[in-house]
Length: 478
Image (tube, rainbow, N blue to C red; front, side, top):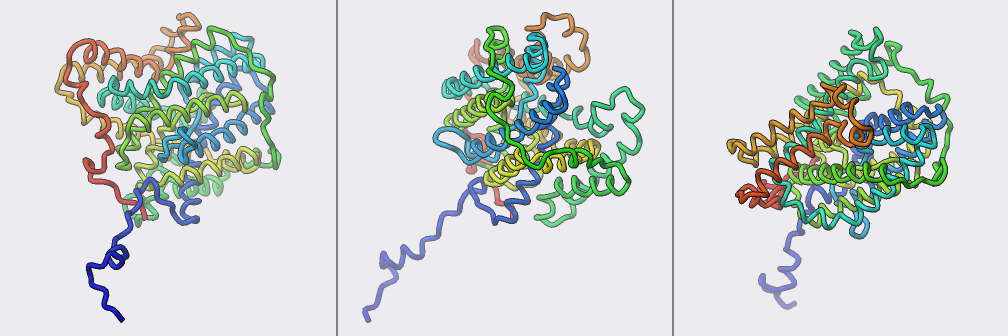
């Protein structure tokens, strides 16, 4: 038999090691995929259903109509998350980004709905504006992605920090028992704070002393453990599970054909513009966490997914969509970076949207337990923003002013509410949101200080964010 020398092409080709997939593209074993995906659903659920609940109650919808809104929201969230994480054509960032209804749109949608008479009649005007804004977002995505140079780290970091700081009070309200209890003796009751604190301490303990796998599911274990303790104490109500139907499908235009009116459409276009800035920040944040390089094409695909999901939301009786910052915090905490985990979470959400009883079971998690878990995740969102701010030179007075003034503007709607109550409804619909006002302020000040004058700040290459060569890469969770 002929001797094959070591330098033989056949031999050397066999010895070439396979290139290891990036942690974002790693396909985990099915059991872990399902477990991590379900953790994302539990972490996301409370924030996902709060928007339809707030809007439905504000517009005076019946309990049956409200239930339908929640199911439609969950179904659309699932589809949108799958599109964003898995990617279809040039739609979807192919990153571990969970899609959910944006909080930025809550106040504008309530104002639009009430201005149209409330009830389902108000919803039809809301859906007309949502569909139009979604189409505009999809078409404008490539153009907006090329404007990233106008959103340097000081702007993106400020916006993400504002999102985290703005969401933390939501977690604290849940920790006190939920916003629906404000003004009652039960709000802030010691047992509520005990559940929240116990859940948070348990999550921190598992994350600190647990093995890598346990640390990656710390939030899931905290939610399950907190709910179990509350159930043993008699503080969990499963009545919603008994009353819910086994199966339900949302049909397109369930409440009737949308109505397209100019002023509501303009208000929603402004909302989606802010949402595009938020999604851009979320994309770079997840690139920072995972070590995955992000470029303008990635941003454009993420924004197209937002636009497509928003159009789908308007058709399937839901609302505008954005990458959920709280789940970015979960990726940071768990270090599980696979986008297929979000695909699995999307499948779970679709199931919850089709099985109201399953959704009711998840909805039975007590508010204080959710608040304790959310506090850690929302805090991590702010931490990612601060991490990105570290790439900006805050010793430069102009950058420091952008950060400081924007933070102050973001706190204005929650601290001086009467100021906005005196505004015209159309103006209030856009500005009565801490995230919106803070983001607009950061963008405007950056344009004033760093764009309309020659500034070296604008030479920062955003594509360096998340570059594995610069960040040292990221190891896959095991």
